[in-house]
Every structure is written in structure tokens, then in C-alpha cells.
Amino acid sequence: MAYLRVSGTKIVDQNGKEIILRGAGLGGWMNMENFISGYPGCEFQIREALTDVVGKEKSEFFFDKFLEYFFTDTDAKFFKSLGLNCIRIPFNYRHFEDDMNPRVLKPEGFKHLDRVIDLCAAHGIYTILDLHTAPGGQNTDWHSDAGTHLANFWAHKDFQDRAVWLWGALAEHYAGNTWIAGYNPLNEPTDARHTRLIAFYDRVYAAIRAADPHHALFLDGNTFASDFSHFGDAHKKWENVAYSIHDYSIFGFPSSPEAYVSSDVQRRRLRRSYEKKRAWMDERGLCVWNGEWGPVYARTEYDGEKTAAVNTERYQVLKDQLDIYNKDRLSWSIWLYKDIGFQGMVHVARSTPYMTLFSAFLAKKQRLAVDAWGADDSHVRSIYQPLIDLIEREVAPENRQLYPAPVWKLSDRVGRLARNILVSEFLVKEWAEHFRGKEDAELDELAKSFTFENCVHREGLNKILMDNATLVAEAQ
Image 1 (cartoon, rainbow, N blue to C red):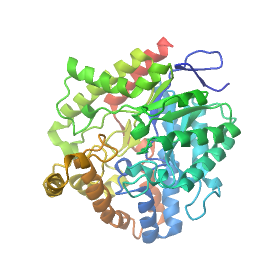
Image 2: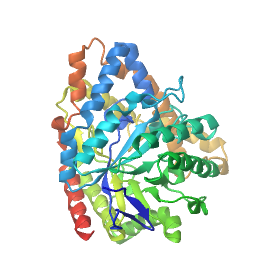
Image 3: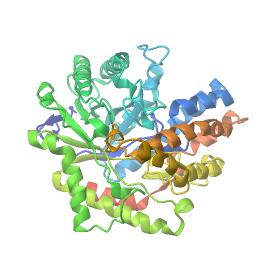
């Protein structure tokens, strides 16, 4: 078997035959996220807090078992049965080096990553390796695991040097693995100056190519993989490269301005948003990959009798987006494969030990809207509105548009800092205290809640993905 490669606007095999990658992101696994697995704040915070409560040995035991159970051969077999052929694997740099011991490779970081890449390969599934969290935080959101709204990756050269070093080590390790479709060097960068991203891509491209001349690279646009306006002629320096957009639609979230009825106007809006993101590539005849997209879903415990109607609406958004992608023969990776019930193709059953233990805590998180992703802030909006009013009263309109505007509106910025960083920080210890006094067998059972056998399938989502995967496969 030979490497996949980028040829013009297409991804092709060794014979030049087009390969359309269709799959999902393994979010929440080697880069844990709060809305995916139920903790508050950032991953480094809950790891530190759990160590304080149960000790280093038990904490490491729990997280290792979590990684083991989250994705197994059974998951790979199910994924392939839907006709999907690619998994994007987000990972946190902390698995491979420590901030207090930089540039010293932790070989144990490859333990689970190698295992899952090999499991996928055994079932004919490609993988794309995604550095989702870089030193210092390459973007302004929680999933860069920095605990701040500042993307300090761009302000300190040493953070960038470490990411370049890490990719050199990863490329050397995986250079001969042809089931890896390629490398996604940096998830959702937010470089306020725009120019530093291109300079970093130049450096990481050179580092990867020095160790691995074969694998394709998938480069995210700036501002959460949406903006290529400052890329200019940068593509002329790079070979075997595709460009990654993240095509989330406002219609797939609780903040949607209106009910989605698949009207002509709404479908045109879906298309316009998507076309704007890929315009730079289309003007130059370059390959586009949609690395993240997809709605979130209502849950009966929080949304009650509205759940079915809301989810029917969200499935229609999904179908209409896929209709666009199919016509363009676009490769895509939906977000996401597994979680605790908000967006995943499969999700942990409410009857499992983990969900039972955290039931009241998860309800509290929902009520306080401490997670940014798809938040419903209706219960606490009145608490934060006076702060928004104060800023609007005291700050001139032209001074309120802080990067990454317009992706973050004023209300979003207040929510990020006040709810998702400040309030969530106060809940970290409360999450960890749920583990106090638990022995290894109990920790194992909690981690085992995330096995495929303990998950519920989101049948509506999976049926749509399977139907569309089949259509695309037959057209190849």
C-alpha cells in the first residue's frame, strides 16, 4: 500500500484514483474537552485536581484506563460498518513533553496513539493526526488547554519552537505508516496578526519534510480554520498540501437566530458561509478538506419535550450540508465520534457508573452554562447582562471589536471570560472530589463507562452519515 497524496484539488491514491475521506474526529480522547467528557475548565486543571484528591498513581491509572476504553477494536469495527473511512485524531502536546521538561520526548505518549492508528488500519480506516493543543495555546478557546482567552503560542517564540520540534519527532516516528492519510499540524489557530501563522507553517513544513517527505499536510486557515485571506501566495512554497476549513453552521446550535426549515434562503446562507471559507483555495485550484463540522443535539434531561423536534431540525441542517459537500466531492470529518450525549455519533449511557456519579454535577454545569460549546445561557443570562450593558455604555463601539471578532461577539467574550474561565475554575475541585476514596476497581468501572458496549448510538445521525458515505463511495 502507498501513501495518499494531494493532486490539484483532489486526494488520490498511488494510481491517481480520487479518494474522498469521510469520517469523524476522535475528540475528547487524547485531547480531553469539557463538554465531551463532563469536566469543567481545561484538561490540565482536572488532571492536577484529580492528583490532589486521589494521588498521582491513582490519577494516572484512571486517565490511562479512560484512554484505553474510549476507543477499542469494537469502535473501529462499528465506524467502518457505516462506510466511513477516516478518523481525525486530535492530541494534546502534553502527552509527548512536559512544560517543565521541554523537548524531552515522552515515549509513553505513543502508547495509545499507535494502538488506535493500528486498530483503524486493521479495519481499512485512514487516520489524520491533529495537534489540537500546542504549547501556550494556539487559539483563544478551552480546547487549546491553556486556561486563558489569550493565544500565547503566537507571543512566545519558544512555544512555536517546541511545536516544530514535536512535529519533527512525530514525523520521524510515523514516516513509514501509509494508513496515516496525513498530518494536521495546528488546530484552529487564532493569530491576531495573521502573518505569524504563515511563518510557523513554513517552519513546521520544513521540519516535517526533513523527516517525512511522503505524508500529506492539512493546514487549517486562521481564526478557527475559517480565514485564508492573508495566505497570499504561500501555497507556492508547499507541496502535497490540502487546506482545512471548519464549516460549523449557526443553524446547528442553540444560538441559532431562527428555526431551521431548510428554506431557499437558509440553504443559500449555508452555501455562502461554506464558499467564503474555501474561496482562497478555489481561486488557486487547491485541495479543500473540511476538518470539523456538524450540529449539536438536544437532550431530554435538559430540553424535555422539545428534544425530538429540535433534533429533527438539526438533522436537516446536517443533510443540507452534506448535500453541498457531496456535490463538491468534498472530504470531511464530522465533529465528533463519542461523547456524553451532546454531539457524538455514540454517547455514554446515562445508566453507567460515570454518568450516574456525575448526574447532578452535569445538570449544574448545564444550568450555569460553564461550557462554551453550544451553551444555553438562558438560566444565567440576567446575571451577566449588566456586565455587557456596562461595557456597551462605557466603551465606544469601535473599541469593542476585539480579535477574534466577528467570531466572538461582545457577549461571547464576556461569556468566555466570566463563565467558561472564571466560574468553571471554581468547579474543578468539585468535579475531582467525586473521586475521593475510590479504589482502583471503582476507578476502572468509571473509566469503563466510555467503552463502546456502554454507549448509546445516535441512530438518526449515523443513518445520515452512512447513507451519504455510501453515495460518495459508489461515485468514486
